[in-house]
Length: 280
Image (tube, rainbow, N blue to C red; front, top):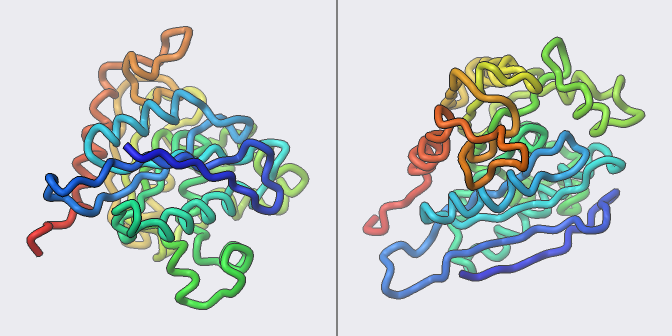
């Protein structure tokens, strides 16, 4: 395995913000030469980044043959759009090293849990906007924007809406004094557009912290834009389940829910779309 760590410093970034990249060791004995990469944004209500939703999920994808990266992004007291800039910078770093690391530059999928899901989905909605591209690349040309493009989106019990079903603290931490000004824009069911990539979503029907309506609203917005979407709603389980098994269970032991364990295998099957036939 190749491990690389990059300090991320954008406008407003906090100390300790970093991108950790885990690359499958290339080998002449393997038929596969380029692998997709999953960029992971852990949850934490924009107050912190959860360790339970970082390496356990990353290594699950890595164990299935994918390259992975984890972004420890800036949370409160940092505010919008700092974390979005950090996601964009991470994708630039990954694409700039794609040949060296044998990553397929057209198969970079952004994944997020809870508020990390809001960050991932926000990036999918806004990556092409001038306020990101101008700061990250210096210009807003089409070619410069393409380096920022996400190729897929995986959302695990995501925070989406600032409306009736909002996880209010996430939006307060994210927006700070601009809460009233930006709440509608950052209520992402209002911001889906044709540039959002194909999307995989899962949630639990009984999530008491971030109601399942968040995923329903985003999925319906994706459908209106004809974005290919796979949505799974499991019948039981609380919030913050990560892998939903013993590997990522918290100290109180509430996050192991057998009904939800299949989500990672379903996501891996969905990721098969990005696997290229090496004979082509």
